[in-house]
Image (cartoon, rainbow, N blue to C red; front, side, top):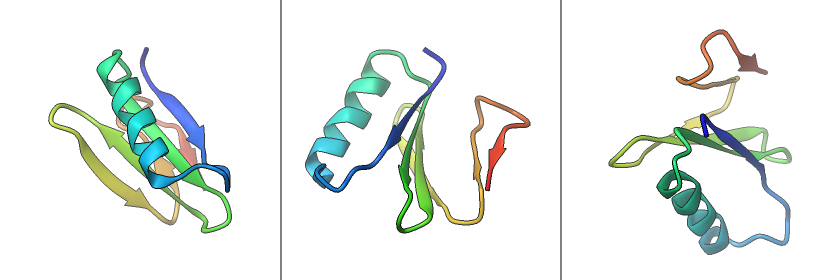
Length: 70
């Protein structure tokens, strides 16, 4: 897997989302995006050890050069 995206729903807790991110990365995803549409930001997770950054203007991934979501 090169990357996965997760759109956050109101029913998911932070603990559930943390578990999903860990599972995706443990199973080979290079990058995981958690998108919060109402708050208009996203968290991008990647690497070992895991690093995370919050994107507020546009979402850009290291694994998909040239792809940008505003």
